[in-house]
Each structure stands twice: as structure tokens, then as C-alpha cells.
Image (tube, rainbow, N blue to C red):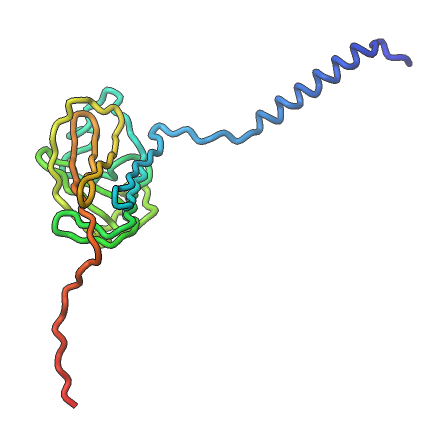
Length: 199
């Protein structure tokens, strides 16, 4: 039985079949995960070639009252969204009176009206603050807060280079929290008196 299609029609049908097949393959492509709170990286390389990097989920204001409602006062906060925020220092640092070796730590906080308690914790890979264990805290610091002139729609962490270290700013809504971080050399260990041994 002879085909009713001429050569040109056959080519058009073949092209249409190939096009449909291509679209079917494209539909099977795995697309990136869409998050309501995107992952953000804040980093800084200082004039002395020291490096700090902070990875966090960025929640958005979306017309809500943030501090005192969405983020309650006096309660532990993951300091971001989704996975707990993590911060890496490539050099030994000091925050307040507390010295800390270079490394990666989880960043938590306890917001309040007058001040924030900043917490660095040694357990990595946490989801939010659900498995937070205070016995793994390696540093706590009471940070001062002030009002921003601008409103930050998304929670934002920024670093600012300064002589001998850097400032870390936590910014959301009209609140600004300043954590001054000093870069230090070798961490001094407290010396224990050795008992004399008589032979």
C-alpha cells in the first residue's frame, strides 16, 4: 500500500515528532529547590588577610512585626531560618572577654529589647534550634542594639573591616545588633602550677 504523504509532508511529521520528544526529555529535568528563605553567604577578607564567612537562611519581614512577636524576646533563636546559621573564622578571635580558636561554629542568639545574647556553639549541622544543647556552647556575649534608619525586609548579616578585627552586624526590620570581633594571635592558656616532685 502506497503512502498518501509526499516527501515534504513526511519530513515535517518527522521534525514534529523529534520536537515533541525533546520537550518530553526537558520536562524530566530536576529543577533547583525553591526556598521561602534563601540561603545567603556573608563574608569578609580583612586588610590583614584574615577571612570570615557566615552562611544563613534569610527570612523575610512580609509586613509582620518581627521582634517580640515572630521572634519572641527572651527565647533562643537560630539567627536566621531553616538550618542553624554557621560562621567560620580562619584566625583566632576574641569577642568581649572570650577568646576562641579558628574554626566553624553554629551561631544562636537570644533577642531582647535592650540587648541580645550572642551564642557560639560547637555542634555543626543542626536544623534550627531543635537539637540545641547549651553544654556545647563555647562563647556567649551580650551585644548592644540600636535602631536602623532603613528598614531591612530580609534578615541580613554584614561584616565591616576595622583596625585589629571586624564588626559583625545583625540587621532586620529597624534593629541593628553590633558584635565587635577582635583578631588575636596565639590564645593564652591559663598556666597550672606544677607540683614539685622529689626524687
